[in-house]
Image 1 (tube, helix red, strand yellow):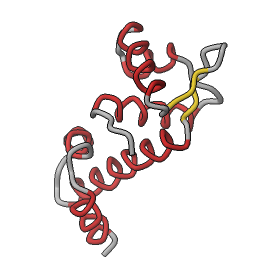
Image 2 (tube, rainbow, N blue to C red; image 1 turned 180 degrees about the horizontal axis):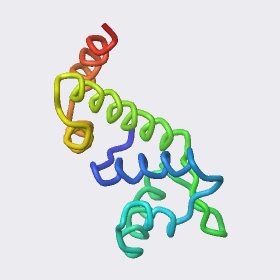
Image 3 (cartoon, helix red, strand yellow; image 1 turned 45 degrees about the vertical axis):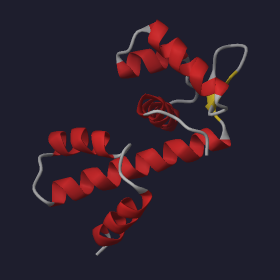
Image 4 (cartoon, helix red, strand yellow; image 1 turned 90 degrees about the vertical axis):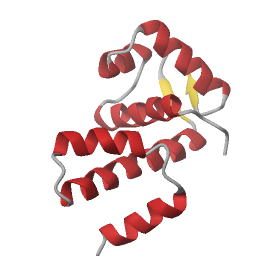
Length: 121
């Protein structure tokens, strides 16, 4: 799997979330959703496109490639499960979501799989 940094994973996750709630996604939608500047969005999209995680058509509509969708789904699953686990152990929902966002990018696959197994019990 192509190397990608935490910020790139966040962009992929945000594109996935936007695609779940609206028909199409453009850079301006991502800027409005994240609060990041248009130049920051443009740079990130260029990097993601260069690594074949997204495609941008001539009208500026963004789609996740199969590799991009796989990575976005992986990060989103980690985020939701970690948030749920943190809430179950008594962390407030706001802090749980913020902490899950930090952990989801660095946790090993092995550790996450074990957390997932225990969360299902």
